[in-house]
Amino acid sequence: MAGNITQFVDEFERQMNGDPIYTHCWKELSAIEDLNSITVAQVTEIIEPYLYKWGRMSRVMGTRKYWNWRQDLTEAYHMCGNLLHTYRGLDLGSVDLAEYKEGTKVCYDSFTLSVGPVSAGKVLHLTCPSYFPMWDTDISKTIRKEMFPGGGKGMGLFTFDAYYQFMHANKYFLNAYREELENLAQKHGKPKLKILDAWLWQLVHGELMPNV
Image 1 (spheres, rainbow, N blue to C red):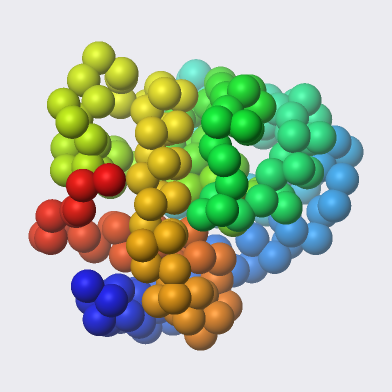
Image 2: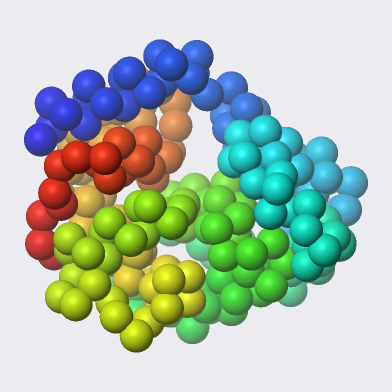
């Protein structure tokens, strides 16, 4: 399995030429220490290319529901700024998720109202890249089917409960393959959760996942 992680991630990085859009946006957002004072201009400059060019979310973000997403997301940052400051210092692999569940829900729900659930996961990850994982429909469905009894039926696909379950799955992977993920993160200059996302994206097309 470890060999597959290295093979998949190295090939992903090769095809993406080092994934420069993600890296640039991640470093730019990391440089903003006080998220309570982030501006609409900064959200537009950093988050827009991240979602549109890297995340390919322009079609969703262009719908009427999200016409004011830049202002709405800025306000979500202001509301959640103190929580996000705390989460920036956390490593998902080593925290007790139950201790931070309430605040995590506040952040997820606020960002989901602003940009939708898939974009919320992407933006929260960019903001706190060692704590919040990214997700999408295929990865979420596959993890639920292969790792959790009943596949999370009755939970909803993109509810907070589903995301919280997804965080537990990522925590499992971070610990099960800690050494490999740490080595790849250092090699490619990315957060471990970003490395894990590249691997999971490819796993949904083939190998079954282990039971948690």
